[in-house]
Length: 472
Ligand code: SF4
Image 1 (cartoon, rainbow, N blue to C red):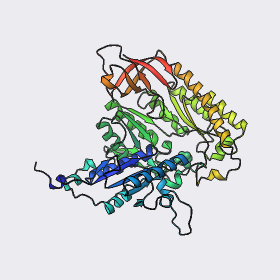
Image 2 (cartoon, rainbow, N blue to C red):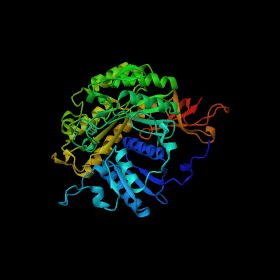
Image 3 (cartoon, rainbow, N blue to C red):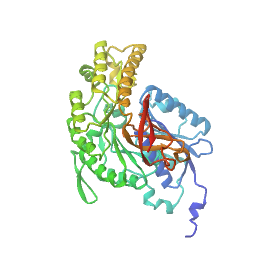
Image 4 (cartoon, rainbow, N blue to C red):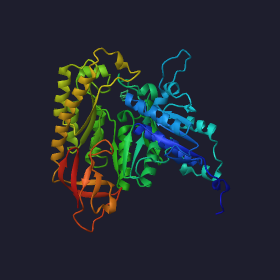
């Protein structure tokens, strides 16, 4: 094939920084893939780039500061900066001129600001400041395009695991959260697109698919669980059907499917048999946030009327090996000592395998700021520490029970083919948020470990949040 003249010219370079949660990461992936599809080169550095895109997070005050600092660094090092992401949607102090925007107020020199999930707006801003390189060859390669139509694009995660976003936005209005005001109401992706993307990811070597959204159990609610099509077959846009299809698909590739952000509605019970059958990992990330009914009411939490202890017992009955991860908030406004004790009792009784806890921190624009009874910061932090002490005791006892067991481990890190050991995760560990399995040198000298492949391993010890195991 002759040389493509457009390819021989130097392509413009866009520096890219991605901050924030897995949902922001998938936005970054969409933008990066589109940039590459249009012939831009991307880089992780500011210097030498024609402009820089910063994908920001605006969830808590620390994240806001990190995002604003990064924008400042990009401006100092490069000078041409486009800001996208949750912080871009955040209002600033109203100066009386209307249209107040926090990023613009702090950094008036930025070229453009968009909110989250705005690939097209970001691309329009890029085109205005660094014209699109004309490259008909690249433009016509459909696989190079990432969009909401279900083609796997550039992934920022290591090649063997990937996040699959099934919806945007949220229909709930939890009083401590501003995500709905930034991302809007729930919009479910068409099931055919989601499954196409899943297949493309498995085809590209992904061994673990992490299903994410703001509320995975609500998938399809916005479109009345409409029947869509995939591979010529009708499939309902609903969590159960999604899990069935993903489970079947993953089986063909020997891969894992892990569910995040699942609220404990009774309908989730129907997904548990798929876990018991090994089609979906027996792992549920359920953001309980609290246990006391009055606090949950003040938080305006979804599924707060559900009997969560009974629900957990039911799940364990259907699938005894299930691992439950959750996050909680300690020191929510008005939380009494008795309400906090109730939460600690719940934690002990519910036997949550992996629990994280934030000390309550007010978020600009959240309704919870109007709830009376803000506790002093020192008290909020003390409760967080008390919570974590109980959580760690529960978790350590559960990990200890695994000593002697043989587990399937997905290898994340294995220098020198794992001859001196490596690091991996079992079904009980989601990447980046849970513990790991530290792998010792394999029992047999001939056995090697490879990143992105599975190994069986015998657990020999539990240390903190982690297990230690020998590959067999
Ligand atoms: S469920 Fe609540 S915490 Fe989660 S995104 Fe929706 S409003 Fe925010």
